[in-house]
Length: 247
Length: 153
Image (tube, each protein chain N blue to C red):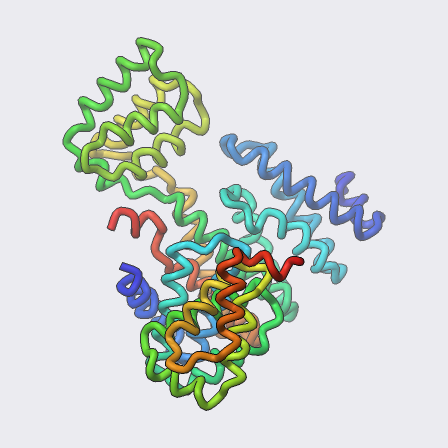
């Protein structure tokens, strides 16, 4: 049994709550890194710790611990994965807990959905090759030194194209690296017309799983769970805010 | 654009729920004031108003939520729906509220809600569609003009 598990079993409620928040924070911190043993271990530990609490009837502590993350404007992928796992393993008779978890999943799933990028409109942009050449020249001349500048440059240079998509894409693929030339190369490869099918595959798979999970709750025996499943599905059905700006 | 998005949302929601009451509840629970009010929230409120418009028997449910809701976090979507409903069918809402003056009083009360700009905004919007003006509305407007600071003193 890990140290965290021991603490969970022996500490007071307030310490347990703090402990869970700390582990949730670690999950947030590691989210920018590729999936590795550390992230997997963290997720496993937090899930097990939460399950211990839920089985002990301490659902309030668990939900309060997670509530700090639920309204996160840019929730970590790992956190959404964790909620999905908790819902998978939840005791169906714990209605209030399931309802709260479902609503949280709906909120975070919508945010996850907004991070998905449809490459097609950008791929149709005729000026892309010249934009990339210009961007490379600027980087080489030292006129551009960070990702925000690269995003802004594309935003300015695209005449009629989907500017916000370009900007979001730059931010997204730049996560693991600060090397602007590498980001431009990656961008070119993605938009070359044969974008790898694996692009955002992990996010899409999780979203599909969340939709299945939520839909399965429509026929739950408790009315409050049904309503929250409905609320979650509303979030999942909502168009991305970008949709309105692209008009 | 919002109307079209709301219609699309309702069409998709109908595939999951055929019962209008469940549709309305799901829409009202789907948003909360913990997030800044955005075009997405407008879409949900418009969809909820459209549900009530198609199923007039839901009017009492909507206004009951408005009158009894204690949780200010969930009052935003309810008031947003009432305002949108008044905008879509002013005559119908007028007739409904004229028979129930306590609802107009409640809207006036919400005009000076301390916690939410959106609640104050939606309450005023809904009141603006009423044909008969309650004398207390003047006080609510003065409150709004003062930037909502009177209630804090």
